[in-house]
Amino acid sequence: MTPPGSNGSHATNELEFKGVFPAPPTPISDDGSVNETALRALLNDNIANGVDGFWMAGSTGEGPILTEEQRETVARVSGEETQGRALAIMHVGAISTASASKAARQAKEFGCAAICCVPPFFFRTSEKAQIEHYKAVADAADGLPFFVYNLPQLTQVETVPPLMEKYMAAVPSIVGLKHSAFNFGDIRTFANMGLKVFSGSGALPLPALTMGAVGTVDAPLALAPWHYSELYAAWSSGDFARAQELQDGVVDIVNIVRMFGAPADVTKAILSERLGIDCGRSIPPVERITDEERVEVLKKARALGLTEQHAAVGV
Image (cartoon, rainbow, N blue to C red):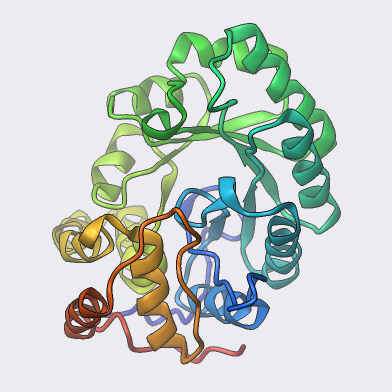
């Protein structure tokens, strides 16, 4: 997992919706507020190691259970820190259309590059209601590019290609999606529809690229941005042997994130040590690791170099 020598350069991939887009956790202080210092340090750490953008307040970022105040802070800090250096795709999905629309307006106000949104969740909705929800959110974002978040494991709604066609017909600002559904083959179908498809699997970045994905969005990317950035650079330059070698190396990174079924808490623990700033714990009822489990997580992370900074990072 040797870090790239570019120190954050995006020479052939400057500010485009493609490449390496970590889905980081949201650092939380003891008082429940977003730890802005930790969030800025996290973003700068990843940018210095060559990432192209971020998928903010997704599932690992605990977006659906952030308060509106917490979510606003994430959008503001993300917009400020990424300007001219990376692209912040702000997740605005919420249980109500009004709340999701409010978040979309804030994403626009604070300079985020795009929004993403899960379909309505908890209450079972018709296709008509889903489309109306997305139309309202897109209107609130006032022209920002819109990415659908296809995460049926948590939302109980799968965006299959025929449904996506209906979304696209009703919401002109839709430009792509994060595809985290189990049907990997749909990546190619969505790409053939002209969509920018980000794979939601940090375990399979190279296979997704060969299927037509423009890049990857997932939590493991935040822990080893240098590894995923080098993999994407190798793929882009046609060095397929090196890309495959790096693909083989992602399994250990992904397995750490998946330890104990607590990806948000695990990533916060590792990043706390790397950044030297407490990123806090996951927000209840999101799963937390025990003190003993934390020791095991950090031992494995140290062995992979995930607790060490790999580039000069300004906080």
